[in-house]
Length: 179
Image (cartoon, rainbow, N blue to C red; front, side, top):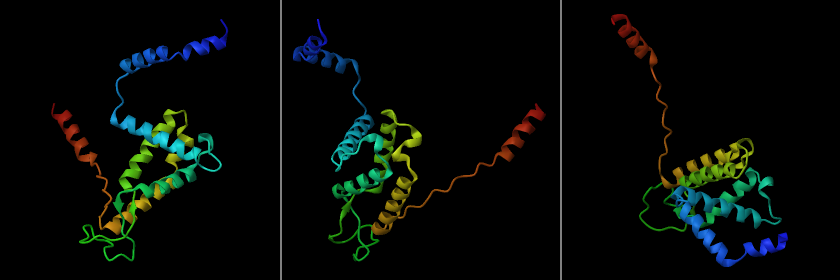
């Protein structure tokens, strides 16, 4: 039997259906996060293929990621008021306006997190991960601040709580001395 007959045999639809159903039964269903990560990864891959000329994943850089994020803005559902809009800075405007809909900052942030993880799962190294590039973090911060001002939503950075270990250490020391 030569290799071409083996290939033909593996393309038998009844054989594929049986093995596919066995594989599906053996693997638990993907979590919502894993399903979304797979969809996002496929969408980004399709975006790269549709570029003229097409871009391979190995040649993808942070500029391609930034272009992808800007491209996604056209499908957003979050109203972001422009500077000239009378509702700029109002969280609950009393009437509709013609300002554009954009992708919400939180959605973009979550998307980048999923794509960053997917990149590494598909063999990319953390050092070359275009989704973890500093330019992406800067872009997301700017989107967050811009949307916060435009929509009148205060995003305040949480202050890190300092841990005061000295009194605790002294307490343990005192407990050891009394024991």
